Length: 575
View 1 (spheres, rainbow, N blue to C red):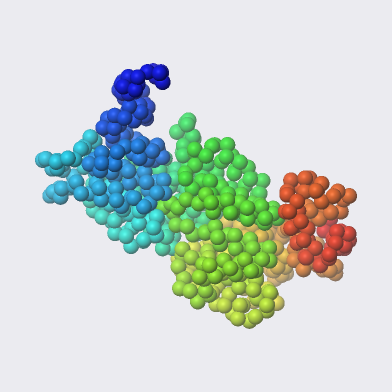
View 2 (cartoon, one colour):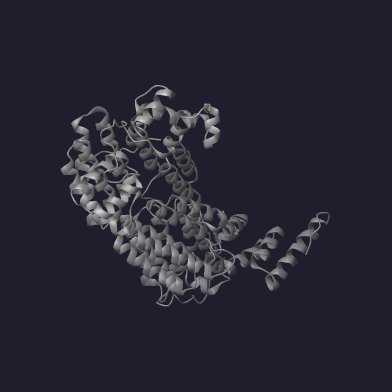
């Protein structure tokens, strides 16, 4: 039905009303609601929205629902408890947290306690409007679920536990959706507190109930959480299987592509990066883009930027990585998953790798971090990053205090991570411990954490956790081979450095620090007749980025001009 702008306003409204009625009967609920809103028939629109809520939740259409509800007069929403709870859901799902509790209270004030909370009272309170009787009966459990979810986003673990357990007391066994949501929230609460095995067990149980309820969209989203938990446990191969199974489930649903599909490609990209398959990692990010942003959850855009930043860093482009991390900060949206890898800490790590100690120390001060802090899982990544900063400060000022603080912090972190089954964290802590001993020149002491590290990482195929550390780690791995430690795996890791045992020419002088792959590309171009702007165009980087790379090359090779850099590179067999 086409409506003409030149019609009289009353006629246009009536035509929209008729169109709404037609779509309600023959078309789509979304079009029926759109026409009712255009007609400003808000009562009709409210009725339609209330009836559509179960399907809209199932299909994760919270953005559309929130837009509709914001169009309705507030006094009309407040007298409809089912709509008020739907409003709370859409606000939560879209990351708009401020008004969630207000909407839940709007609904709760209409509920009349009865002997059986699942029975409708004989008479509704005056002024209350209910269209969907089944949804109304489920409100006590739904309100408790959304309170638990709200508490999870805020990081209030005790409240999550309190409200999720209340749901399980209120809701019947056959209400798979609400019980599944509550059980999954308990899993998220365990994840937030660092109890990862309990988190995985509870979340898996919750998703099984949600799938039985037919909410495949939520199961897809749950796959992302389950894979993240397995990665935190150091179980990369299981995480990859979860992503693959999630994608298979999404594919079985046919077109259109389900929301969450793009996010799974991002997660798979991060695992491929750890396997040192940067091409596959990049292709998966590009594949996620091809799916379209509408196939990602609200967190997709910032997670994509973080994943691409880590690829850029692995390619030797720290400036490009920092640009992407800055973009990720602007796009960041909180959600129900704990933020255990803050973007600010990722930036600090890049600064440490660049030798920008001042920026890294500023970050530590801004976060009020100390080696003597009480430890928690939510700040574990921050504290491991702090240990890296302290080691960088020791390298700069050779102050024993920095090393002692780093060593003490790492030992406490390792104990906490192993106690919580967080082997993903334990792996990195062992890396930093080995590097700390190496920096002190104590190779035998460095091999102790390194041997434990290799035992943990070999079954899972870790590579980049070693390669990202550069020359110091390569030297330790060569020492490990000589001691007969995990020889085949270590040789595989050395090949990823571009080094094999016995190939390195120790008789020749070495650079003060290893050149990144991107710096090697620039160095090769410096050996040509191309000008600076021509090199920048050839490498597809800005002139400022080229200058930064060139300065880093000069610093590492301990030269001060292009000709000397080329000569030094030839001496070191860098070409």
